[in-house]
Length: 332
Ligand SMILES: NC(=O)C1=CN([C@@H]2O[C@H](COP(=O)(O)OP(=O)(O)OC[C@H]3O[C@@H](n4cnc5c(N)ncnc54)[C@H](O)[C@@H]3O)[C@@H](O)[C@H]2O)C=CC1
Ligand SMILES: CC(=O)[C@](C)(O)C(=O)O
Ligand SMILES: [Mg+2]
Ligand SMILES: [Mg+2]
Image 1: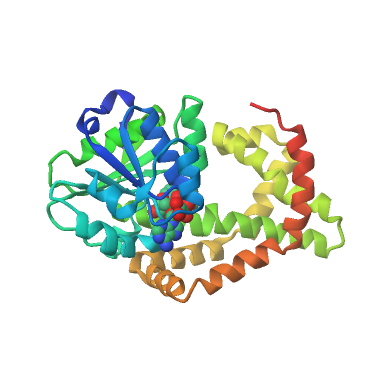
Image 2: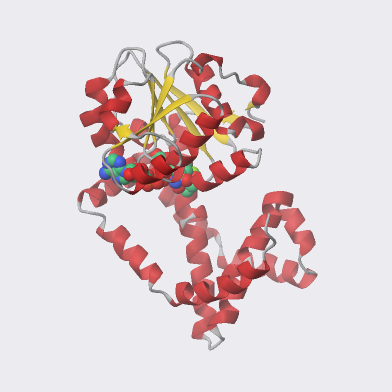
């Protein structure tokens, strides 16, 4: 197994006297800023303008400042703004204020790997990539746990980049679980692949298609929602805690037999073949170019997709069904 870093392998010493700028106060930003502060580190929040994030940061006890001021006042600069925004913010606000010996830190390798950001030689460039959504990074930390993370070093000017990456991972709570070392290339390509074919894209489409088949066949939408979408969480929780075999142990033999046979019939080799095409587009940079172009046009495809999803029957039914399910979910 890959080397696993846990709490005992990481120390906050290399960064305890540094000031850390967290740029962005969204999904990851709010979690990092608060976790690092609660771990005793000196954190400033840097934002472009006064708005929703600014207000939220103030509510959480920070005194947010404009991006360039946060950069001027810090040693370590963490990019927790959307991937497509990072290049412009880097060129306009960060680079002009960067000092030799500063650190540029990322939660995902996109901008460095695809060379949208090309840092000068005299800074450290490293990454701590949590393998979970921002709100969970905060929630687990508050409850005494942590979301696992990957660390990677792109540029090691100080010779201490890995130690600092592990220190931040520790302050985030990630070493309470475990941290594995990777490269910017491996993290970027696998993260994009996972979210596209599986975590975000694949699972959504799988559940929606199953829901639609039942509804189109005349079954009640609420029944279809329970069966194809709502129950997924319980199945995934079992996989998360006990693996596929553990999940199989919890379901009936009928489900095991039908699942094994029909599962492989529906998700067959042709699906794997298209997954490989997706991976190739990620590796070649084609996906990155496509996304940059889409962003430049004002994200029309993204907007249309989100709109279609929001207006779908599965979302409408889901809002009603979730109320019922959440009522039964134990509070903890
Ligand atoms: N969302 C997640 O759970 C995960 C995100 N990541 C990575 O973390 C980084 C941050 O992602 P998220 O937290 O999802 O970002 P987000 O979309 O939640 O970021 C919102 C923040 O960025 C600021 N922002 C938005 N547009 C801006 C603009 N044009 N100029 C300047 N600031 C702007 C907002 O004011 C807000 O504070 C990305 O590199 C992402 O790939 C990595 C792991 C998981
Ligand atoms: C939450 C996460 O890890 C993702 C899916 O990769 C992301 O939000 O980019
Ligand atoms: Mg991810
Ligand atoms: Mg991602």
